[in-house]
Length: 377
Figure 1 (tube, helix red, strand yellow):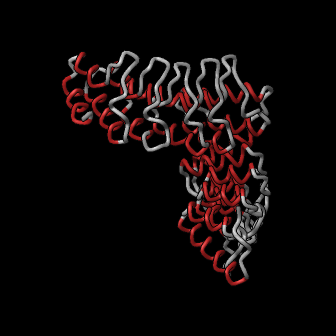
Figure 2: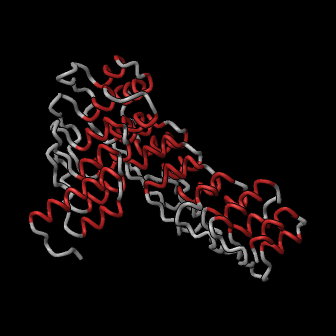
Figure 3: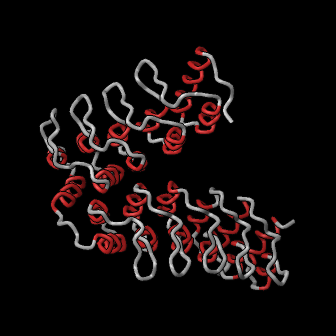
């Protein structure tokens, strides 16, 4: 429920505080200010609004908040540029994807004669973040052959002039590749192979981003299964579903607990995966990760909101699996410590009433038992 309508002076103060919160990427404060009536489109004397700040600074959650609260998606900055141009210039691929899916003008030209694709190439760098940004723009169908009125170059010619070999390869591939006869099949093949450029080509040709193979796997699930991070980053920016279940009850997110890929975990988190979806054993991602000794993954996943005390269909928690199915060595010792430090309960027993400590003792895993003994009271 919104607070009573503020007067003009109060409104100006609220709007200024909201812009300050936007610069700080303080989403919680921004949310409270919006609830009090702050305007996400209100600009200062430099034509900056909370919405436009979110686009240029790459603040994805803040951007989503502004879009949910009436952001004018095609609003312009002091350069007569859209948020898409601002985000593309900075290489914010996820923001670029969010804006494209919100219906922003894909091909607007700003005051200095650049479209978003021009700014990404001419003012950007030959780095993975800009590669993702260029692929997202290409996959979404932006014009790729227009000459910038100011630079006199197409995006491909810009990449060549800047010696951006990676971006040049992407643009050359996307602009010269034949339209695939079966875009959906091409998308799935490219995702499995890890060919992010071919994924962009397939999406540009109209492939269904949620197309499935004979095992009901989507492109994002294939990318997660085979740890194709660049593909996943593109698909997530384009809005692929991180919760799509295949015939074995895997989702892109759940697979990360098996592979232990921290890079894939990070690629999927912006998509907002449902951390409560269970695998075919009734488990959440920390359980297979703990069993398999994926230390770095467990260290990262405990910082999410996933339930570390979840009990699977076998009656085991992540800690129980680390003890029962682990080898008692250094990796599983580290995992148990990480789980304990994150607040996991060491007293939850299995269906027979046997605790993690008792399992460690039965297996003569002395170091593991010592760690658990100190924490089990």
